Length: 457
Image (cartoon, rainbow, N blue to C red; front, side, top):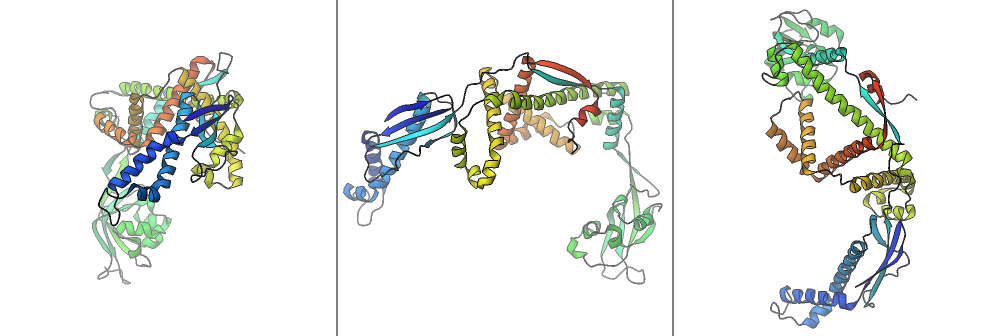
């Protein structure tokens, strides 16, 4: 096997791989011997078939397979021994003649590959980036407390129905005379209805103001305007109530009302863990600690986004690429091959922007030995798991439960890659924060929130 670098610049390399019979002959012979010893040939005992027959039947396919394997090894060797930092994958040049396996004994192929250029315009203190410090006022803490109280309600029994109550009882289909319909639809005792879900105002008024043990006659079709809610009330499939125009009775047996939670020890324990907080003042201090940390994270996330935009517009844009060669390679990928010519050309500006930004970031991460460690990956996965549980009101999840859930997440290659990419982006932003000049600005939570709203057309 002979490898020769024929051309090399900062953005492209062309190399030749030459495979001779000495490179592939022994591999072909080994493959044919395995076929002879292990194959089943009609009229011959195992291992007794003449090699000439094996050669005739399988010689060419064995040669093709072994030559292709040698070529692949040659490409890998060329990249490794010449320390070529590639973008995409090597491709056979258009000028390389097509291979004729039957006639050729020696195979010479030229490959071309795009190279990753060096990054030189590193950030300095002359680069200036805004950093937003989010203020946390007593009014912000008050607002957060009210949000927490509303999102963690306590449920109490009531005597008279109000608009946001839940009523439970027995639902029964009625006949034309207003009496229970024999064989009609019915649900005993545990039928549940959220009064606010009744879309028709007149039907809703039938329930509001009613007391325990009242019997309401209503029309579910008119009340809900949908067979889905109608069927749900009765615990049926929507197909089972379609076309039903009957009126129904609802005997109210229980009225449940949600009220804002009270600031007491039970509430503190449920929110922070038993005994962690024992008074409203301690709760406010704890919330200030939590939301101050959250604000720091939000400020850093905003800085990360601004850093990535700055790099794209002022640093990475200066990176030179062999764009025609990269386009040629990308067209051979699964994603590129699916596009029409118009879609392909339209996607190219963003494609090159993303590559340049990746090259710039990766060069800095590599030079400074900044990586996503296994501990980083697991901790980030645990944070994701905690956030997912919190969406369902499940706080204070035990550490072992979070750890097991996180391990399940990072077992999936796609999830692991996404998590590690975010870790590296975050670490890159933290590195940038120390390199550039920060123009710090204090903003309110409301002002900060507006920075993420889409600009008006």
